[in-house]
Length: 196
Image (cartoon, rainbow, N blue to C red):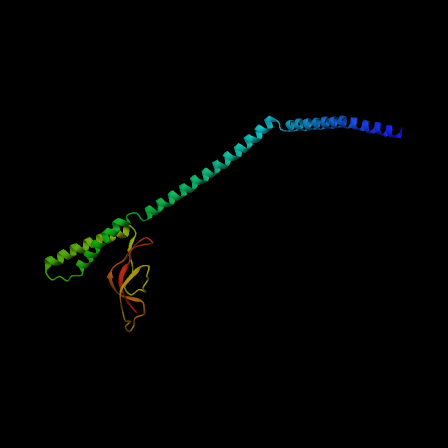
């Protein structure tokens, strides 16, 4: 009888197990549905749309500020380039005029005796003076050379001679060709002889 009782209890347990499994599955399904319903309730479509629109607005605002900064930088760069162009405007023309001025100055170094040559020299002197004044009016200055200390940024040494009494080393003792500057830029270095 004891065996029958145990067998019956085992049969009952076997019968209860599938039922309990079904109940457990149903409970899990209900919990899962509740979670999904809760998640759906948490993510309201309007709130999601608002969040998406806020993110899109932030992206567009960032792009706008970047574009504005880029435009400001381009404007500054163009303004700086224009200032550089205006600052050194005409330097090519000036460089082409300088050899003619050199020739005028060489003509003035020639000694003349007769009256016609003196008048001609006076005319050449007036032309050279006019060209030099025009260059000064446009901020072109002759580079000081004779007796000055040699400066490789402004002078070009074409010859060196030994230092004589009363001279310092690296002093310019002769100028072959004058140098010129436009504001702070060297247009042409002076060709000089340096005592060393």
